[in-house]
Image (cartoon, rainbow, N blue to C red; front, side, top):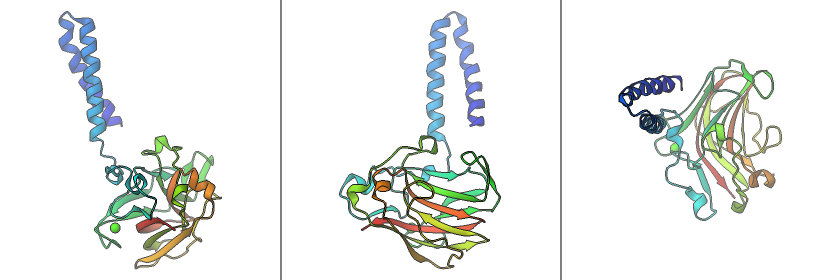
Length: 232
Ligand SMILES: [Ca+2]
């Protein structure tokens, strides 16, 4: 963002020089228009690594029937974004091509184990989470989607990876501490293994702010995830 600000400032200075010849108000208007255009161009060029996970095809399965809904196969099919918590430090979240469970890509999420500051908790915490959220960006977190018409009973997915210490768990929609989740896993398999989250709290499904969460607890590691599906 800092780079963008500097670039904008430079553009502003250049566009101010021409109108000073005698058209102050018109110059101001032109300056504002040029500034807005550059902001739009810069937003369009933003190289956010999560942009490639944005589904450009529309509502996916949500726009049609309410059958099984694969929210990630070789892309994120939710129109939502990805949020890292408690901050984005010391973690990597990406799509990778090596040894996916299906197609050509899978998700790779790593944490190096460094404790991070949590604004919500007001202290350093020993966990991190990658969250597939309903909102397109974390700044808009809080946007909800009603998944209850799907009558979904579980989320199925495939994982592999390794933990350096601590545990990992996978969660469905709902607040921390009360959402449906897998058990805490102290080991991840080297090869792909299927897992599932049983969805029991229908209130969380009707007011979903998140589709799926990967939570490292007590230590870092690397996990690969593929074929995340809401199903009956
Ligand atoms: Ca895949």
